[in-house]
Amino acid sequence: MSTPWYVVKYMPDLYRREPRNVGVVLLDDDGGLARFYGQDPETGEVIPNWAAQLVPETRTYQQWVHYFVHHVGRGSWSRVLETLQRRRSFDNFYVEEGGSYEREYDDPQSAIEDLFRSLVTDAPMPAQGASSPELRSLVKRVFELAHVDKRVEKDPEYEVAVDGPRHQTHAKIRFDYRFVNGKTTLMERVPLSLEATRTNSEKVDALLYRIERVIANSDVEDFVAFYHVPDRATEEQERALEPTIRRLEAYADALDVGDVSFAARNLRQRLGVGK
Image (cartoon, rainbow, N blue to C red; front, side, top):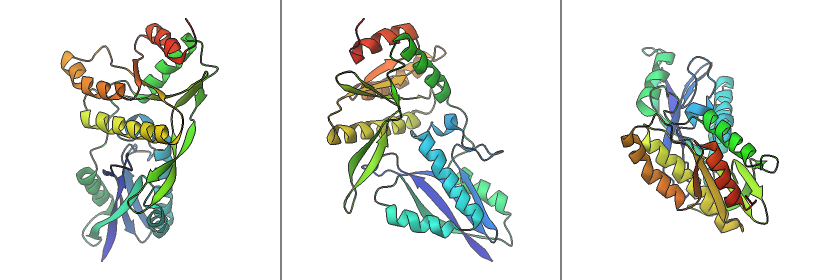
């Protein structure tokens, strides 16, 4: 007897619509099994540091993975398919049926792991550059030294128009921080990997798309992107990151927070809060 399996796809940029496989779902009589990028294979929890190598909005990604896994476990996967079909023109996630497996011959756990390895990736490792928690800590210290930590707003949201393939709709876009001082500045952490150059490009593409949408739908024009190139980076790795950083600089003030004192002085100047 056969049962279906599905591929969960994620599009960081709704305008370019270039999906990336992030999960697989395998159904059975008890509900099914699911495996997603960034999950700890032992606990099933999404590790933000791992997921951030591919997905810029890790908090939202965690919520979606929880939603998918919840319905797989309850045997209500059809509700997920119905919901995503209605929302397909403006959601970053969608699902495609991949095929079926023969339960008489295939062990479900082995089957889901094989599908995950072949369609998504091997179990991800933490980023080789500044990890999300490390970068978050550095940015927090920069805010404190710049004496702006009490005035920085976290997780601001903007509702923007999105031109879908069939019609225009609206979506909410979130940034890591907002600072208002006569003008509004939106700020974002960009954890860069020393190894995964494709992942760096995908994260930057997603950020630049959000910046473009906010510019088109609001009066915000000032953006800061925080990143860090670790001291352990080789010259070759630093050169490989240069095109990514230059792309960031086309849209935002790209600020390396490795030297927190220097970064704090630069941030104060860019935010217009004096010396």
